[in-house]
Length: 370
Ligand code: TRP
Image 1: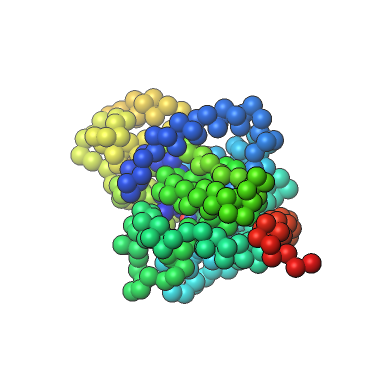
Image 2: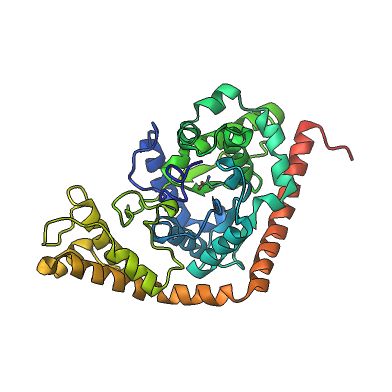
């Protein structure tokens, strides 16, 4: 997958048209599910994940991380996947993979994902999860894989000379990520909706073929959230690979330097008008999100003081808001042993579940030889 078209570079729920995906139904369904979640959080199991390709940024924070912490704090059982095999879909070598995994776990912990309540795990550590890929692949046709709009888009933007088998089949692998723990809710951005459709298809076909009357898998739902759309400092989509994003882990000085270089426009008076003034409005929105205020009020207050004042406001807002998170992150970063323990414990917990699901799958398929 390319950095252009898939989260983690796209914010979950961002109002960007997906590649030929109708989101009306998914949005309506998500609103319904939100209500049920609030009424009975204990009934749901959530799985989300990211590819470890670098440090997460403010777009991830306001787009997805905050939402995960909210679900966890509501009391929903939450699984957070570090999708380390999926990194290999669009590159030939996984450089710095171990470092990226550590960075991702640090970002999670710093944001408030609590390993006591949420299971943080890497899918490469779970043989039973990966084994689900084999029966699952048999349930999907090559024509269906070819039609997947997100994969098509990623292939079009891929930096690889040839499309690997893993790229082509990764949505089925993702079905294993989701179904191994029988998650029923998957908070994702709309670029991931086609993948969720694959997961639902796999679950349905498996149940029909092998488990009629006694379904093994639920058909999970996407949970789309209304995430604010933050642009990168160059006015294009915020993305790790474009050097236009403020990382969660950035220092106050790095934040200031990046925001100082941000693109604005020639109109002095600051207003909040995302359609007509995307760059200025994105900075206003960033300040507003950090301060928990209405963006119009933030713009109004800066008024004729212009872009320099806006940048000062945004920088201060980010640095103030993220200071505690950044301090926590640094503390965790000093304790490698703890990080390893978090992953080890998460992997152990997830492995038990994966083994038990695989056992059910074997029983349903008639391949439980004991
Ligand atoms: N494809 C997702 C992304 O690029 C990461 C991912 C892997 C994922 N497995 C998942 C997301 C399962 C949700 C559920 O962001």
